[in-house]
Length: 203
Image (cartoon, rainbow, N blue to C red; front, top):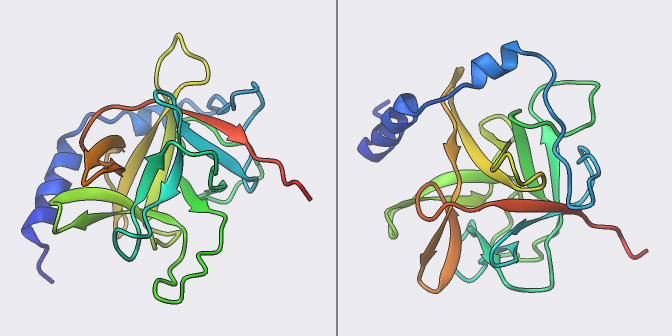
């Protein structure tokens, strides 16, 4: 099977990126990710992810394509996101620099675009960009949450960690890309910091 030239270029970029993942793993226990209330972020619960400046919540651009890309918008309706661990573990705490699946905990209610809400990264040919979107699977779509600034306790960054077969490539920082009137999550663009907060059901 031939690897498309664009994918090959991306894999070369990923291979040459600086990654300390294996060294970090060798150190053992990692710091817990904390939300804006200083509580440990837990697997399986509903959280929002928001860009710190401006305070934009993560959403879906259902009008853009199918599967829809993940965007950040200035709205009061924060879509719930839950985290799951890629590896089996008795630890239910989300920890920095560990591989995770991200998933919107919502029903799309769209018969024309009925795809899983698991995040993935895919090349958008019309935009010529690698975009974060939904429609992924749990095996090959891995993200990490990493400290964005040592002086800002609650500020983090998202990283995408590509997997091809059994090969784990170095992680790439997720950025914000403004195009066509939308703020896309993409693998190039402006650096962003994020904060997390738990969403509590009203029922």
